[in-house]
Structure formats: structure tokens, C-alpha cells
Image 1 (cartoon, rainbow, N blue to C red):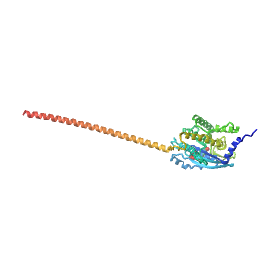
Image 2: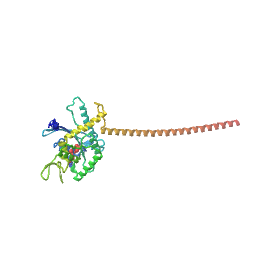
Image 3: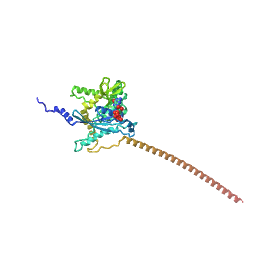
Image 4: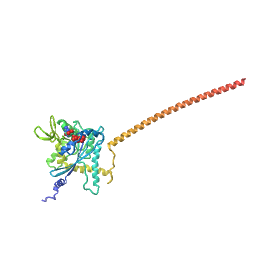
Length: 379
Ligand SMILES: Nc1nc2c(ncn2[C@@H]2O[C@H](COP(=O)(O)OP(=O)(O)OP(=O)(O)O)[C@@H](O)[C@H]2O)c(=O)[nH]1
């Protein structure tokens, strides 16, 4: 019996290549301001990747109505395995009274990364490409206990077709276990009914039983409930853990009964990082590339759309003001025209009166002249 040609060893080879080169992994966090995005990133990687925000400045963001995208880069190494990590933070999302187009900069950012990568691939020199394609997008849901908001649905729909979308329920410690379970169920139903595409940890036929079971558990736990904290607290039984301390007790980040933080970390870092990278390459990037190829000639620039929501709003306001001004001027003009017509009629009437007065005077004069002639003839 031959040993075969060694193809069976390929998965190990791939693992070795990745281990040698290190993985390049990009995560994006999206969600309303103050939902704990920065805290979760720091909790996930057990380090202060992203500096805590200055909350006194929060109201300043209201003034410039743009969602800014912040890029944090870090190189993590564990047991000689290097990961180049990029975190794309989108602070301030959904802060404004009018959130209609607040998703646009986020969606544009994702598309722009696919575009930049595609253009680099078309160059003769293709090594050392700069690659900021997003491999996993964590969408933070406010723990209202009700259901998804229309804005959540709109954004998640757009994200789901572009990236591996992973919905998470923020600040799970603010809901009771029952409310949390109900909330999760409602969110799952909305996701299904609205046809929102979310990342599904793949259960492969040839996975060993434990891996298949793990993937199934992850699938069933979505959307992951999470608690973020970088603070060490001591439990009643003397353990020092990451958690949030309350009068009623401690909400533990890594306790499976309190939240799904461990499941999320496992999916992102331990078990599905390579799957997230390859689905981005094979599904999302490929979809983008094909879509663009259908509408553009090779090498043609992407038409730049000036769809900055801020400019769009300003343009609309200007257009409205212009139309209102034109309308007001038209009304003023019509009033003036009416006034002129009335004045003309009045003058015409005066003229007619004057005419008839002249005619009457002429007739009177004729009569007088005739009477005078007859009088002189008799004498
Ligand atoms: N109860 C609770 N509070 C949290 C949790 N995670 C973060 N916080 C708190 O929420 C506040 C906001 O946290 P951030 O991590 O700065 O929120 P963010 O989403 O990054 O905010 P922006 O950058 O403004 O968009 C801080 O006071 C955190 O301590 C959590 O899981 N539960």
C-alpha cells in the first residue's frame, strides 16, 4: 500500500506557513456611541489597544456630523505566533438626531478597502500589498430588551452583504438573564425575517466531533451577549477576575453563565480566525470584484460619488431654500401684476367717464349753438 503523495499533509503545511508569516487580521467595531466598543477591544486583547475616550469631549462630536473612522494597529505575539492586528473603530456612530445616512462612511470604508486591494492586484508589482479588508465586523446592539431598531436593520443589511457580520448585544450585565434570552430570540427572528446575512461558523462534514459541536454552540449563541471590562475585581470566593462590580454582585466577563464573551473570543481568535480571513477573500472580496468587473472596464477608475451625507443634507437644504425664495418672488410678482391690472382698469374707466363728459359737453354746445342761430334769424 502506498502512502499517497503527501497531499494529506497540506493542512499542516498551510498551518506552518501561516504560523511562520503570521496572520493579518482586521476587525471593525460598529455601534452607537458609548456601547462599550473600545472597552471590548481592550478586553479581547487583554491590553489597552485603544485609549479610553474623553467623555467631556463627547458633545463636540455632535458639531461635525461625520462618523470618523479610527484605525489602530498592533502586533500581538503568543507562543511565537504573530498576528498583525488592525482594529477599525467607528466612534460616534448614530449619535445624531438625523441618523439617516450615518452608515455611509462605514460602508464606504469597507468598499474602499476592497477597491484598494483590487487595484493593487492589477499592478505588475503585486507583492507587499496594503490590505485593510475587514475580516470581521462586530455590530453592537444597544441592550434595550425590546428588539432591533429600524436603523440597526438598515445598517446590518448593508454590512452583511459586504463583510463577515457578527452581531453582539452590548453591556449584557444591564439585562436580567430572562430578558436577555428573550431579547436574543427576538433579534434572531428579526435577522431571519429581514434576510440579514450574518457570519455562520461553518460546521464542515469532515470536522472532528468536538470542532463540529463547538461551531454549533457558537452558531446557536448568536447574537453574542458581551460584558467588557479591563478592571480586575475580587469575587466573594477570592478569585481575581475581569468583571464589573455591583451592589448585587459581580458580572464576570469570562463566566459563560453571565455572557458569551468567551465564545466570541474563541470564534475571533482561537478557532475561526482563518475561516474569517478566507471567507473575506473568497466570498466578500470576490463579490465586490465581480460586481465591479461587470460595470467597469479593466483599469477604469471607480466613479467617485460625492455622497458625503453632510454635503447631501446641505445641498438639499439649499435647494429647498432656493425653491422657497423663487416661490415667494413669484407670488410678489403676481400681486404686483394684479395691482397693475386693477390700476389700468381704473384709469380706463376714468378715461371713459372723461370721454362721455366731453361728449355731453359737445352735445350741449351744439344745442346752444343751434338755439342761438334760430334766435338771431327771428329778429
Ligand atoms: N455596564 C457596562 N458598562 C460598560 C461595558 N463596557 C463598557 N462599559 C462602559 O461604557 C462606557 C463607554 O465605553 P466605551 O468602551 O468608551 O464605549 P464606545 O462604544 O467605545 O464609545 P465611543 O468611542 O464614544 O463610540 C464606559 O464608561 C465603560 O466603562 C459593559 O459591558 N457593561
